[in-house]
Image 1 (cartoon, one colour):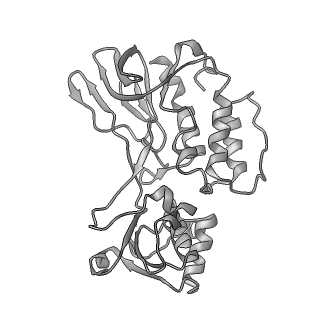
Image 2 (cartoon, rainbow, N blue to C red):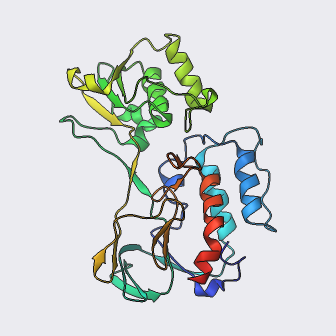
Length: 304
């Protein structure tokens, strides 16, 4: 989007540890997107006019997240930008941005505009029992942690939580799932903003019919009554990876949910900086939503 808006690609530096598609490929690649492939590529064609994006999958189907990550890698690969293998630790602005990063040692660079998209980590609880990392609980790696007589307490019953439920059910593992709110599941088909759909909705429907014999659903208020759990899984959302941002000697701890602006000359996008939905209450979290949000800010970014 920046180069199509007229920015010289040689004026762009990207700092990333691996340039491998990030978490969407390395952690969550096996998970199916909640967004149909047709919507994703239609949005990308809209925000990247003139770029060839193939119909790689059934337009009405959902795909593994790795397919979206690999598509984005391919779209960016031809751009002659400066690629730095490293990670950013601190940003400071005194009229111009100094970026502190680590790449075979501590380094800095100066720039007029900064865009952050450092991703997020799953939120964790504090139960005194071991936890299974969410990225492992969401795919076949979960079986490496469990024995047949284990009891898992699962926090969260939205999209990720339902997939974990299915994986535990398929292994015959006794599970107590803890939900926040008035009911365990809210469906997109019922008009709930951000409600479960696709695979998650199918799993929830099966749970509602009693097909999951070793699953117990309880509200959060009753979570402290659960005894004997041997493992915990936390599917409670994400917290941004921390990059310290200092402006005129003071830390910046928030951003504008409508524009993504963190400070003058700095913006944040993606799961670390989700954009407010049109209702001003919920947050839009998908590749398509992120792309449309970024497109809306490009002119401001190009002005600095």
